[in-house]
Each structure stands twice: as structure tokens, then as C-alpha cells.
Image 1 (cartoon, helix red, strand yellow):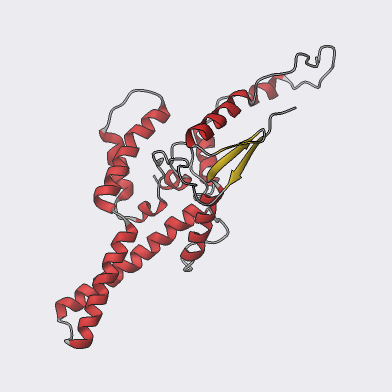
Image 2 (cartoon, rainbow, N blue to C red):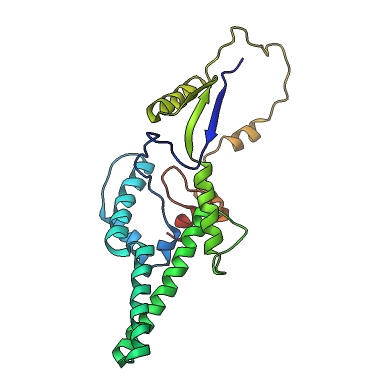
Length: 247
């Protein structure tokens, strides 16, 4: 009988529970709304030289540059929005008491414009995290996207595991049980296996076999990528399909 491996999902860690590891890289589609971002990607791609597999080249060439650019130039959208809203509150209060100079009016208009842009970026980000493809951004759905994204996070959260009736809460023991489970998942435990010798199966011709085993053409790959939804969950490298659509 297969070993019982039951995951119990909770919304918060118990005291002394599992520690979070390093957050993986996740490409934000909102970055592409920044002026000149595609040109930046092209510049980053061409200025480095690495050796290795294509996936290694792709990851090493772009991830660190994007992370550094996000940290040093793009910044935290939520923090920037909070600062601008604070500045607007001060200017609005001053207008009601002393009035605003022409320079301050210009500053307020610029701040309002920046807040609107940040709200749009914020909605794109939460839309991507929610992976709700039936609802498009631009209709003030940020709260709904936020709720769905948090729901995904809670669903992906493991507080403890029950294996063969034993509950594991310690992070290291939970991790060890997960590793052990997948180590033995595809191991064969039966000594006897059925045989197909002597059975007749329909066969395909040489032309069909050659077509199935042919190398994928570049245009065929590009066509498939273009047909994919841009807000689907990212691949193992953290890049969304929208990145490949635009960059």
C-alpha cells in the first residue's frame, strides 16, 4: 500500500515553524510599462559574456541586472505611492490655509500624475500575482487581484505535514519528509511486472515517425510563445510569458 503523505495547509506558521528561504526571482510585468525598459534589456543582454547552457546564459545575463535596476532606479511602488500621497496631503492642507504658489500647483499636478501611474503599475502587479486571466487590468480591480494573490499564497503555504499518522511541525523535519517522499515516489516496489511480448500494436509509418522526431523550427517555437497568455505563472527562471512577448 502506498505511503500516506498528507499536507495540512494553514495561513500562519506556528511558533518555531518553518523558516522562509531566499525569495526566488519573479519578473514583474509592470516593469515593461517603464519608458525605455526594452532598450535596457537589449543593452544588458549585449554587454555581458558568459559560457554555458542557453538557460544559464539567459538567467545570468538578465536577472542580476534587472534586480539591481529595480532596487536602485525603479524602487518600491507602494513606498513611492505612500510618499507622494503624503506630499499631496500637505499641499492640499496648505492650499486651504495659505493658498499655493504657482510652483506648488505644478508640483501637486505632477504628484497626482505620478500617483495615477503608480496605481496603474500596482494593479498590473497584483493582476499578475492573482493569475486571473478573465479580468483585465484598468477597471480598478486592484483590491480583487490583491485578494486572489493572497489566496494563492495561503494555498501554497505549508505549516506542517502528516505522514503515516505522524505530524511534523519543525521546518527541517518537514523539508526532510518532502525530500524523502519525492525520492521514493517513482521507485519500483513490485517484484513482478507485466510483459507485452507477443502483443501486436498498430505502428506508424516512416514519414509520420520522421515528422514526430524532427527538430522544432524557430518560427514554430515563436508562434507557440506568442499564443500563450502573458500573465500565466512564470517558468522556473522566474520570467513571465509577457517578457518574451515584448522583449
